[in-house]
Length: 364
Image (cartoon, rainbow, N blue to C red; front, side, top):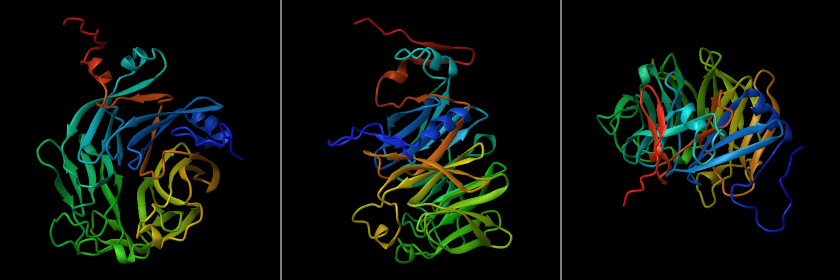
């Protein structure tokens, strides 16, 4: 059963959504904000429950936002975009006194650094040990570190890739972290030629053990979003609409849940998994290979992980067609984030001992 905002004969307003009524209550009980990136719409969106019966959203504009990472120790976020990685620091104090809405937000992420990486087609992004920032560099078919010294520093490359080249040879896309370092990675194939993954995209998906370099599992349908939860590896198979749990020792997997739609992007909050849904891109030779029900919708499905039961969904009626990543901001009931497209962030001043909202300069 879904709750609709309104039945309209005219087109819905931008970013209109519908959601199962129990999801507002669930997110409110979990005490978190769900962040999603939609590169197609150029937005990072925060979804929050202001009460047990009301879900609200806050979209912010970024150029092709993709992977989302959180450093909980320092309360930082990072976002991969078209040609850069942007980091943000949270301030509860600045959130409380946000000039446009005092007392409304319990978190406010402010831009701190921009790493000018170039257009690397970065997919997954994760913080690791000592604040190190790891990314999947899809264009160059490798896992990398992002820092102030280079566009990227190679960390791991599949053994069959014979040299670094900007050719997207195997569509390396996913990365699962363990003990602060990349542990598993996913790709669409094991090919070493430019765009070599395309002909067999639905049949040759592969999971790798980064530490050993060995193949854990292959023959998968477009694996995305590998994540380790409670010591177990979970992966989304976009081509078949499946959430799977992988036995990394045996090289096998079991289906946790079959979902109607193209699944990509996954985050865990409590016992619940939030999984992104995307529409199939029109005029795409890759998407044309898929025969999936439910691919006329984009949004989020929620699954109770211990049982595999479907709890509900959040579906966009307009604006959002494709989602890349999801992330659950624990302990933040209503979070805000500022980009650099407006002047708002310039008034926020953070120093080690305190914070300020600077007064406007009235001098000519």
